[in-house]
Picture (cartoon, rainbow, N blue to C red):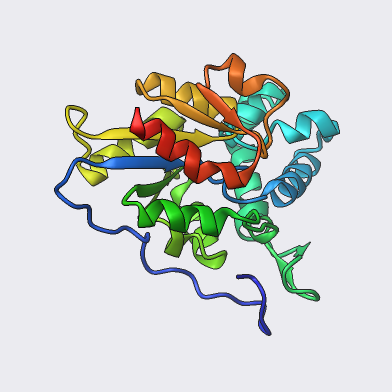
Length: 256
């Protein structure tokens, strides 16, 4: 967890990737922000600092909330950051989110951390993931967050030990969309569409759209950051409202 006597945390040395068995795979792809972790406070704080540094008006509260989930460059475009400032905006955001320790650490009073560590795992997630792994599911984090950011977050908050692999976007934006991350994960784990099955679990339209693009279903997480009706409108086959429903919903899906 993020608690302890010291502000400085050791960076991880691996991606938490575990080998897969030769039996047909049952893969549960898990979004990170808003699905496993309550990361909005750190994301929104970093977005605010980014707009200040760009000398642009900070978006209102409703628009700020929409930054959680999609790639940062998508949200900057939507909020009228000029094309010639987009790369700079992405760099600024990544600096505030991943490097500059200017935000109060909610898990370690008196310490300052980068935005990515203003974060916590949702209550109940560890128990649900443990139950899924015990039942033989392969759990893979699949996030639009750049992988180099996602791995230390997962390590710091204990997610690395709860899953079998962590897969994210690339730093150079060549792997940016959720469907690209899913295919990247599948390539790494040797996913065989002829025999294996997978389900996307996430809280935003990006998860539902990414799943659809990969011919997968999406289980929507109603405790996350979606706007009302968003997940159903984007084709989530089911939306669960409570974390304690996760294990049973996944088991029911794969039983069909």
